[in-house]
Length: 315
Ligand code: MN
Image (cartoon, rainbow, N blue to C red; front, side, top):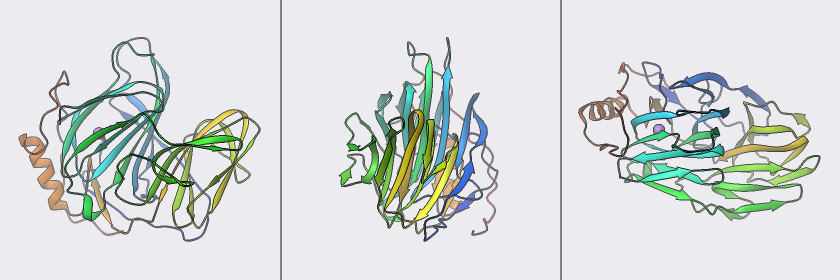
């Protein structure tokens, strides 16, 4: 996915981890991605990073009878990984390495942009006519942000079975399990699934900061009812989380990680450290350099929006 309507200047994003457990509700901001209504949960002015997670959009549930629910034409990325995770439907990734990956529920599409890649994401033909999912970005740390671009798909992810439900580990580490997905800093991303009326206790890494986004159904977290389409920032220092599904089954996304120590600059689809890098990446995209072409995509690519390369105040 793509950040289609960026601010004209870059945004400096730094972690502001709360050392002790906290409970902050940040309702998602309703916006639009090429005609698809989405909710932006990160970055928000009140919270820009959770561990290395720097971007989080959720979309759907959506039912459509014809056409494409999602069609994001080829666009470039640098300095990040994109994590596409579906709860319903199908999405087709195509990239400038010549790779394609059809994502379906419980299958992870992970793209490491490193020094530069281009990709498209679209609803494939002959699908279910449904779409619901999340897209996240992970900021790459300084030591890894120039790695060669890559794309990987994971169909076998660890499932942590717990009393009252389970967690599917998408990225990183959880309860002694490790995701096979390529990761560059200590983190966790998991889908938590609770059975109706039962109590689920999820063990956590106390050194991580965490956030939870309810995706489906009703549930309480630490006794507090959660609203859909809201990010709950939970701070550091928690050893466990208690979910109770109220009514039907519930699903929620858990993200977290060691507090990210670097201030990143975000603009459009780029994660950088300096405005000069953003200027160079934008010029390379416009000139057809560095990122390659997404040959398998049928249609024009996205043009970069205008960028004002003025100094960005540090947060
Ligand atoms: Mn993208």
